[in-house]
Image 1 (cartoon, rainbow, N blue to C red):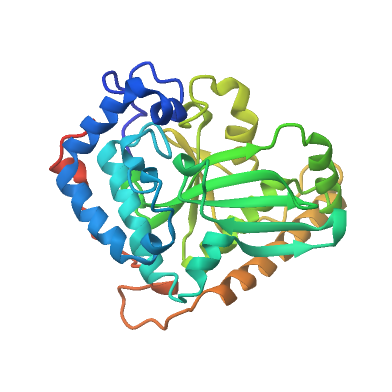
Image 2: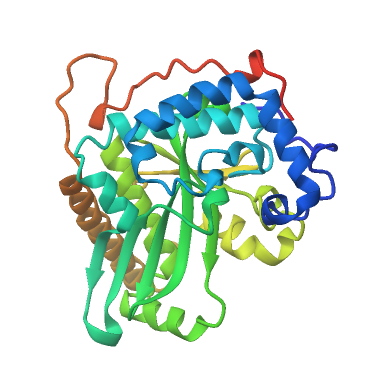
Length: 330
């Protein structure tokens, strides 16, 4: 397991209240340039790979932060610059090996619907897409919309497990969990429409469906205290981070919660309302099965040809050499 969560590092980004300040405040521009310079050789190798990858063909080329997120507090405050660069490089690998169907990549750029129901004002859908504003909280987003209006978003990335002290080849790491201000009434309406399953839980089900297709067994959710945007005032955001992970069988680790991507085998129901609880579980499982099949149909599953691959050709063992071993980081 990794060592205890490190305290925020003084220096280049000291006094930073959130990741957007790093991006927009001119006083931090020098810090970003220094971080880039310190990691320039590795960044050069990554950028060459980015330009060759399917991911590099669909990102917004005019926005440099798609390929330089590692110079900011990207995904979680405890990752080093070198680790963040490793995560970005891993995304290129994933797009080129797991998402084998070429039509899938531009679909994600425009938004890929994983689930939808109803019509008109009661039409609801869950969409997988590349992020725009929340790019520092993850490489991909899942959006829940009701009547065409977005109510909730999860932002996540695929992270080599070794960076988190885990034996998993890769995990899904959620860096952002956010509702939209002023939509509380619609959020309640959405939960009633879905058997008391709220929007955040629906998006977690969608992420589980993606993970099961990719052979990923673990989902990690960042603690509010380590989230790049809200870490300065975590108490106000615990309900959409820590408490959400805890409700989904999250086990606290150093700076994040570890959740199973598969539904735990537990038929026991404590307390009252047992029939309602079981009905809700069956509804969640049905949604998971539906989304799993939808995502499976959107990607080309390649047959296993050796022990070095698992479902969708994601390597069972990544030969990751931590960049921190030979780079000086910010």
